[in-house]
Amino acid sequence: MAHYTPDQIAALLAGFRAPDRAHYPELAAYTRDEIYTDFFGGGGLYLATHMLRTLRLNPGDIVLDLGCGRGPTSIFLVQHFDVTVIAVDLWTSATFLNDKFTARGYGDRIMPLNLDATQPLPFAENYFDAIFCMNSFNFYGGSVEFVQRLLAHLKPGGQLCLGSEVLSDEFTAEQLQHPPHVYAFQLPPPNEHVNVFEDDFKKQHTPAWWHRLFVRAGLTIEHCAELDDADAIYEELVRYEYAHDLDPFDVDICLQQIEWGRTHRPRKTLFVLTASQR
Image (cartoon, rainbow, N blue to C red; front, side):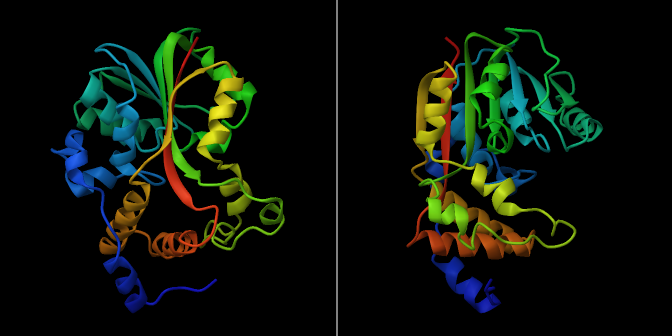
């Protein structure tokens, strides 16, 4: 796979856009660093904001932040809705999360837990007012059976909000046999054993695919749409990572994916799907 030189990167980034901050009044008090710090996957607080706009939450509601990562979305939920959050992740230490939430002044509003979402969850039925899941659902949630098991913990009328990296089109049969190089690559050590296509991109789908899955699971779809400024959000993330020298490998592969996606399909994009329990 080809790699970009510093001059090539500079030339590409010069033509990249950024989201219009005027369209994000919820982020007026946030710095550029705060929008991206501790996030996995694309979107940062831009994607989280789109998700929050679809939710009906009241102070004191209980929200499951499923696949919370390093916890920025849990804090964002508390700040904007004054809710109580159960922050669940498989890989991020609950001790790390608790220390972070306590240091930020939210230790009494956010409870971190280390749990495997694919296993039975230790929560009561009809417990959560909402389930919030950003950039992790595709790794484990792509079946009707999983969605229905998760819904057992959601109150009647409660909302399930999914915000995620997604594809503009499904992979063709030929692409499944011979994946596009920008989606089938080897990670640098110590993760060179990871099969990126099988473990990640093959599990990503279009908004329409997720819409059909949630309907089959018995949910009422309230919102399902690709973000109008998804491309600008991706471009700004790459500019941010490059400027801060955060992950040269990710910058390189994201540049290749963005350039490939200008003339090929599927391209990476972002979407939000919010549905309610009947």
